[in-house]
Image (tube, rainbow, N blue to C red; front, side, top):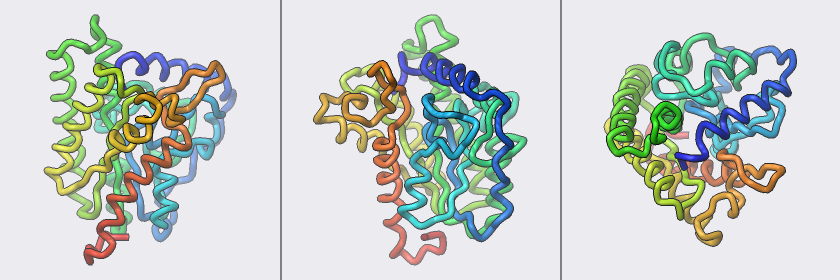
Length: 288
């Protein structure tokens, strides 16, 4: 889902959001205030955040992603710590490479409020919520977007793509090592989709990123919710075009934003739920 729809769409969405914002709202309440009500932690970027460039960003309740849908289906209390524009480096360090997560956080509230990195918040949350039953993660697309913005050929070189994926693999290993040091329950990575399955460059980049995610997640006893295949099947009747299939946010000019529509978010949630519910009869203490 990468290449041409990447940073241009995000930059337009962020600028539009800032124009809407004005003075902004107060930060969302700290999720750690009610330990009993939070047993699903969602992590990642704009996809789990539910980013939509057409809504008012001053109220995070306007953003509904696949975690909100999955939490309802699984009857779990959700804490969604994701941040639009988050890269794997920014997830780890406040000085790491960023693709607009930090500017967004400075301007608008996230679903939950925290001061440090997303990883810092995740570790603190998991320590203080030992009964957490599910952690989901969608991350890595913004690593490729940064590569596209900073290389002359927009990261189409095999060498540049391989280097970006290698950095992502190292960062994801660091992230999951830290998470597994405090959490041993159900861990699910939700993979990315393609905006157009007929475009082999776009689809190939998404598939390559997803392969790294699956490999690293498996090392840490996690599983994959296959968002890539879920979108591909739903888009097949529209010639592989996720926009035409209604899976992406439709803009007023008739084109689509890169982010999932309500239908697309529900599709990703079903992929996540299908993985999660398999454990319910296993006797796993982390099962919902």
